[in-house]
Amino acid sequence: MKISFLGLGVMGAPMARHLVHAGHDVTVYNRTPAKADAWVAAHGGRAAATPAAAADGADVVLACVGADADLRAVTLGPDGAFVAMAPGSLFVDHTTVSAAIARELADVGDRRGLLVLDAPVSGGQAGAENGALTIMCGGSEAAFAAASPVMQAYAKRMGHMGPAGAGQLTKMVNQLCIAGVLQGLSEGLALGRAAGLDLDAVVDVISKGAAQSWQMDNRAGTMARGQFDFGFAVDWMRKDLGLALDEARRLGVPLPLGALVDQFYADVQGMGGGRQDTSSLIRRLVR
Image 1 (cartoon, rainbow, N blue to C red):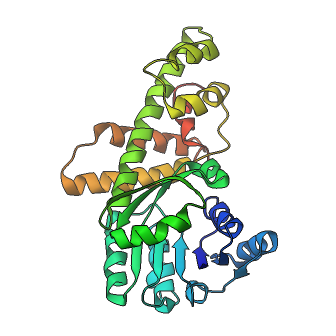
Image 2: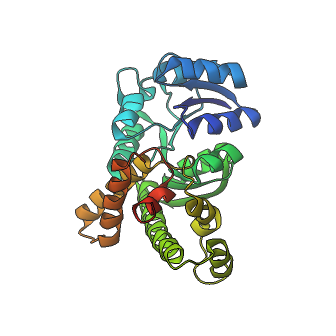
Image 3: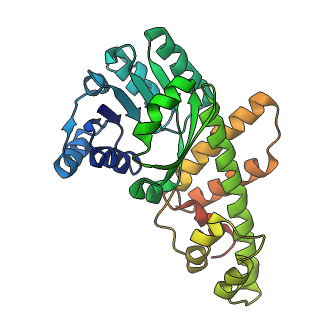
């Protein structure tokens, strides 16, 4: 298929690479042109000067950018992809953004005859590199059906969660669950260290019981060693938690733990850890 990919950050670049390896004809766009040129030099395909130029003639346009404003710019801006997309083509957004903009894009796309899917991902940079992302999708059945064969290039699991915005809402649930688990893991490891326990031995035992989690299996060791220069950045987690807290206020749902952990992450940012992995939450407790 002829595919364009907008946004070549730590997630987008490997996702686009998997599409090339799957045999698709890929054109890329990035706000920093040098990054797009470097990607093409490494993986082939073409670079476009604008999102509209990238989308021109594409069967599928995918995006993985930063936030609502970035997504609106690459889709609805004067040089945005929607200007050039032909009726019947598909737009898939892998950015984590608000449910409101997901619904807005679906509405605009529907009026233009486009299929639109909000499809935020979970799995972090490692999941993108390994083609093992989990994708939470919102939109029509037709959009999900059209997107699934494309997303298989970098996904281990895909789920159709409901109408437009449902993918983003599911991602909010995902991030709240991660934040709560990491706070509990941080506190447990901090207590174990203060008590003089062998943290490796502690984790080995409790990870075989009800305390087991992905975060424990993949982050407890690096947390105990104070290693955080990898993974999903605190800055991005705060953005995601902000989306969840905003949505919760709109719905009248109290999220006391989510709000508290969001402020704890603000503390980590104040300690200079904004670009560190979310497991750096333990830095507040163990220094």
